[in-house]
Amino acid sequence: MEPRLQRRVQRYGWDKAAEFYEGYWQEQLAPAQDTLLAMARIRPGDRVLDVACGTGLVTFRAAEAAGGNGAVLATDISDSMVGIVRRAARDRNVPHVTARRMDAEAVEADDASFDVVLCALGLMYVPDPDAALKEMHRVLKPGGRAVAAVWGKRDRCGWADIFPIVDARVKSEVCPLFFQQGNGETLETTFTRAGFTGVRSERLNTLLHYASDDDALGAAFLGGPVALAYSRFDAPTRDAAHAEYLESIRPFHKDGRYAIPGEFVVTSGARQDTGHETTDHPNLEDAYP
Image (spheres, rainbow, N blue to C red):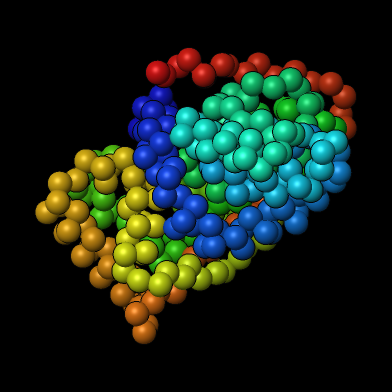
């Protein structure tokens, strides 16, 4: 898919999913987020960038660790996600959280301006993960840390059939390389190419628990990356897609509940103190309406 079109699909797709995201995914993503934050070692007073922040599940935990003397900039390609974070920051009275719509491949921030950069389960959706990680490296202070989490290998994620099921009905190609960074040492290699040192990874096996068919379907179709394509289905198409997806996860169903296997890869790296460097970075903010 042409990168500009992929960004549009992601932007408007996550706008569709935003109101459903936390309800269906907060518990299920917690193991990856816990590991990411532990590896980040955020300290009081740190300036933190949260790339692909979603509804702020990581943002506000980072803000708590950084404290009132720190600051967190949360960015996402989706206006709706950014709006949710802004409202939550106001409602929770967390003035040191700022949220802006921004592309991961063109971070609108000065060189060496953050102590920590986080990206929790966002790199799978970026057209150019190398460019995104180079931007994370650029905005880190010397000695700063970046941590990213992605889904792991496709054959270790029991929900993975959602993509061919949807694509058979609407050719969205929403995530053509969704599992690429989770294969082998690919994410570590991408970190290293971006200039990070001390790169290391943890691979986590987990179970995604859902209490009913409706919950499993909601997570797959409403609260995730296929939400835009799903919104175009008529009722018969939805019914058929639901039946096919439930059949695909039937091996993980017991006593009315689901325990669907999943795998995460969490990788960290540091920016070495090699002196000032400047990287040209295009402003993609106006590249699509």
